[in-house]
Amino acid sequence: MPDDLSPHAWPLDNSYARLPDRFYARLAPTPVATPKLVKLNRPLALQLGLDPEALASPEGVAMLAGNKLPPGAEPIALAYAGHQFGNFVPQLGDGRALLLGEVIDNTGVRRDIQLKGSGPTPFSRRGDGRAALGPVLREYIISEAMHALGIPTTRSLAAVTTGEPVYRETALPGAVLTRVASSHIRVGTFQFFAARGDVDAVKLLADHVIARHYPDATGYRDLYEKVIARQAALVAQWLCIGFIHGVMNTDNVSIAGETIDYGPCAFMDVYHPETVFSSIDHMGRYAYAKQPQIAGWNMARLGEALMPLFSGDPDEALKQANESLQTYNVRFGRALVGGLRRKLGLFTEQDGDGELAQAFFSVLADNGIDFTQAFRRLGEGTARGLFDEPAPFDAWEQRWRDRIAQEPQDEATRREAMRAANPIYIPRNHRVEAALGAAIERGDYGPFEELLTVLARPFAERSEFDAYALPPSEDEQRNFRTY
Ligand code: AMP
Ligand code: MG
Image 1 (spheres, rainbow, N blue to C red):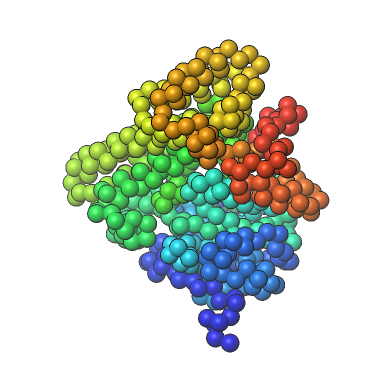
Image 2 (cartoon, protein in one colour; image 1 turned 120 degrees about the vertical axis):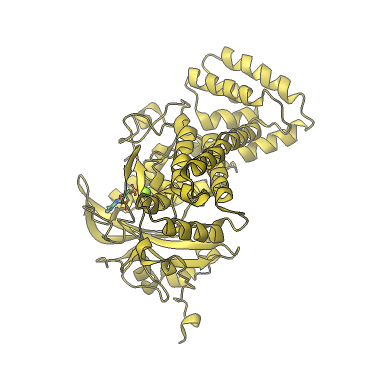
């Protein structure tokens, strides 16, 4: 049977693998003992032009585990560098992931298909190249939740267990995640070549990025400013939803402006600007409210890498990079206030709107109020019930009522708009942990599946899922940490 008629023929292209050899290492995934499909994202498969039935068959599962290559795959581990917690590491790279190739999805967008946990690569250093089931399921849940919340993100196509243990602090079941991304090009990819003084490669990469992600860019300065704009918009969306990425190193910043590398990320329950969940973020560098500033810092590092493309004169190049970087604060501020207006049910713009939102945040922080519930219930008119001591809320609410009285829209329209801006269901840590625990300890994927069902429609209240809207009990809260 010709390849193009086989249900196992992924329509793969390999544009990144056509870049020069120094952009990646070519190698095949390392086979695993006994692949077993534990989750397949059928709607996403269809969107990518892949046959879900074929993917779920033994041959398809062998491909999702890295035991067999789909026809047309040219697997590569991408080279990149990055600033990790502020310190530059000149070589990181895909130490446990392989890009199989790219497909054009049904909206015409080129999407990477990558196996994560597929075995060691030349970039692995001392790592085993593998992933444990817990983090794989966690990435699956949170990335798909982010997508449903309308936030740019990598997606999860499949999770396969390997039948092999991985050794962390203890032996854990191994798994492979199939990740889908607009691309896996990171700020750190540019830094990799810039650090070597390889300006030719920086230019080739920039041209590739323009062709792929920013076809309207009028030049390298414009490319830089477009990346900045997407990053600013992304971080504003994170703040509006209570998301904490956890490890905003430059190697974890997508040039396409998608949320990428779901490791120690988590959603806040009680609002506090200094919230940190990551066990390795001792200094709170990547705390909730630090994220805008860190994203700006990361964009400055991108500017340094791109500078040789701006001008042959280093002083002039630096001047231009700094000018472009100035656009970050403006873009971010505008995106954040826009997002907050939507959350507060404001359709028109007034100067004090950002300050009004900040005042609400302060009331939440001072009173230890759940972030997601506060905004959702504000729209429903029941937020007061969240407060033991309602006076501070009452005072703020009066300001808000005065403000919305100046809006042309009627109450019902505002309520509907607030429901569409403020989710009722987010991947709360205690729910995610419970779903992972059931799957890992008992092989019970019921809670995982139900959580995915709830999170697929985060704005649509469904009475049978009432409990998913609730914050953790004190017992469930227990100093939650991510790894
Ligand atoms: P991450 O925390 O997934 O963003 O990874 C940071 C860096 O460590 C990247 O260069 C990864 O490829 C590498 N890495 C993470 N886990 C492993 C592993 N189990 N084996 C080899 N390399 C890894
Ligand atoms: Mg990473």
